[in-house]
Length: 306
Image (spheres, rainbow, N blue to C red):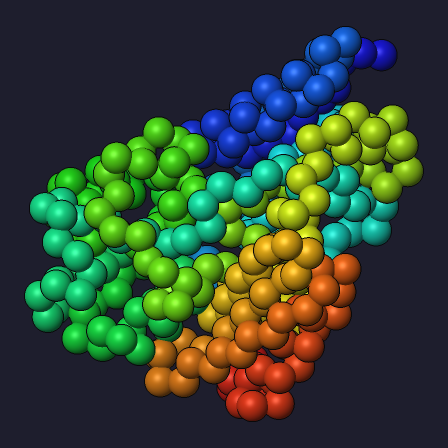
């Protein structure tokens, strides 16, 4: 059978990202036909609460994974920052595509930089990770939970519901809104989420044929970076309830890995970085996570879990 069924969420960004992946797969597998199937996840349906309040992992992935497991789909395309560090039995990460810009960005209506926003300005973001880091540097701003598609959030900014947005650069680039970006935030200022900017293809563990199909667009440098970042997430057992950041850079066979854990109010932000051979990606990530746990991270996690 030459038709490969691709599972994706139905949002503008998800469809755009999946379209990009499918184009790469078609180029690498010209004898195959790829058919996209859309699914609505819990994260897509519950829009009146922040992700941290829904209290579940896999908010944007479970329905796609169910389609894989019961045979309705052959592969699923995910934003890796949404994919939990532990996958369901029977599923594996078959491929990591080349990464887009992993940084966070600020968007304002009039081009005002984050540092120049007036006290009391309303900053919209759906991420506790971003709020904790930004609040540590600008506690005088009001941070407002904001959810929805990329275009929906931009519309809310234009309507004056918020004065600024903080979002992922990758999503804006892929959705064609890169020209709206006011300012890119250096990772030293705001460490990205684990896997931010990278797309992963999830497949059934026993499906060697699909594994071979997707392996043709696998990008090893990105995969090594993401492996280290997801190792930090796994060791910290972080979901949406704790601000956790991770960022790795592959450079000439070496991997530079930095991790962060913070209190939700930004009063404590703990960071640590390590460097080593890229072949040690997973252990480097675990090393960073262990340092964070030993230097205050465990107390932050315990407090978040009540």
